[in-house]
Length: 317
Image 1 (cartoon, rainbow, N blue to C red):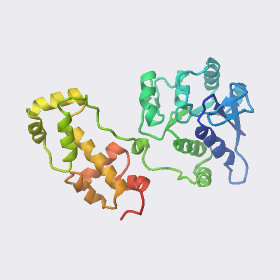
Image 2: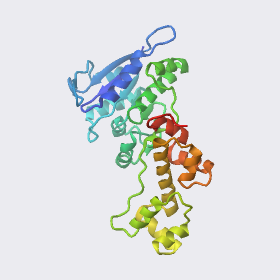
Image 3: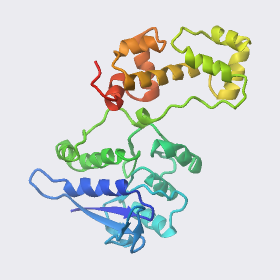
Image 4: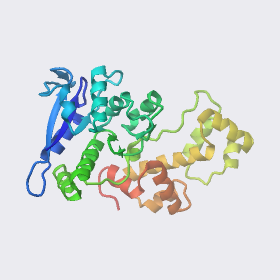
């Protein structure tokens, strides 16, 4: 029997806590046997979960016998108790598998076990994780990262992807596929969490001379704008525009324009039924192939898959 310990600390996110409990508890082998025993454990007798208080039936000592330890996300990212860090380091030293869901990556990162490794977390918190732990290679675009003994996943539903991945590692695709069907989830989802990121344009200081130019670029992003066109609008040479634009926005005028076009395309894919080729032309791409390639590079999935995920209302044509 494989023991899965789910660690519930104060301010635990209920969705992240419930996901591994449900997925592993309901998993069955082809002969009907139960492969996992789930234990919810905590540092204290009662745990504040925000909307409710729970009483974990197991203490922190349950980590010492667990085969897999799951770290759900927490609303409190500022401090992890030393007792928890020590218990996790000891579990890792004896070979236990440790996986985090969402901001649970901050708990795992605090142990130092992720130093030098690739990891992920919810895209909203990825920048903070990278700043706090520069030794970790934080990838905000993927649903989960498997380093073998240590795994991390993105937010919310990505915890399901991670749990299904662990089941597939342990018992193969057939068992994992059955668990996925019970969760009403595909065993593998196309794309990573990049498709859920709100791609804002790089900030421009208020009062900057480029504010009117940026507004004009966004309003006219469907036109065939060249660097010389933008420079003329800004009243400077192309060389000066490139240098000053990068100083104030952190990117080049043409890269900024490409992102503006992709943002416009995302809106059209969500709100209209226009064919993808037409949208490519409407946002300023001369080639639908170039549009698809650029869209996937920035958003992390294809225009068609993005539309299936985020389309409002009727089925697109």
